[in-house]
Length: 299
Image 1 (spheres, rainbow, N blue to C red):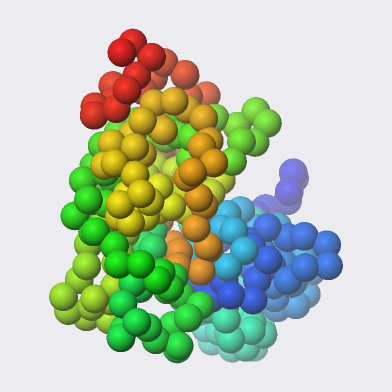
Image 2: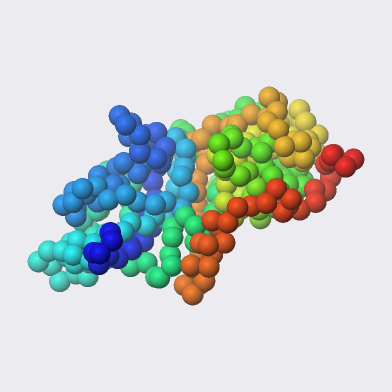
């Protein structure tokens, strides 16, 4: 928007990923980005503006706390209020609600602070993955949000295996490679539990948090954990895979339906621009933590 006054707008949204072919716009396919951009174009009466997203989700993955930003001309931003007495943010949120399908909800619209970038300013993303391994708890109303697993799982063994993966590592063994993309990530949380109370009582639930995730990383980590929980692999096996930095045929990538993006966290406003610059920097191959409990090249 060179030479034109513009504003950057942050949108917080949630969606049910069941009927979407993922986040990214693709010709002939229904995607979250496509639906959102089409709605913005309809409301703003402009060509569909492009949005930038905090985390691109795969087909079937859900989101409760997704974040995007969109750059608009100041004129389009002010014009969205029409004849109402609402602020532009209130008007845009309300009008999007009127045109978006039921499986996408925009919860909040605000002017983004200086330096904000939905993707590069983020400090971390937090996901959950839900598994049901008890036929008595199998709920057909949640069949698109909880993975059904026929065998009982050893949650303690899964959690013990998960702890060995924490830290800054090259997660190539758990990522689908993309040309020119690094697979170095900082895994801050990978924890398994079987809650006793609440909506997830009795399920096997993974809590996963990292500075960022590469393609299919969470679902590959879950697949390796399930192999341990079934007793097919030792507790140290996922850490051995991590150290080897290669995909293993025995490590399955589980279905997307059990995965939900819960939250994207950002630093204070004054640190947004610096965080974005830091995130854009190339991650060095030797800038990783020492693995514990796994075989390494050094023995």
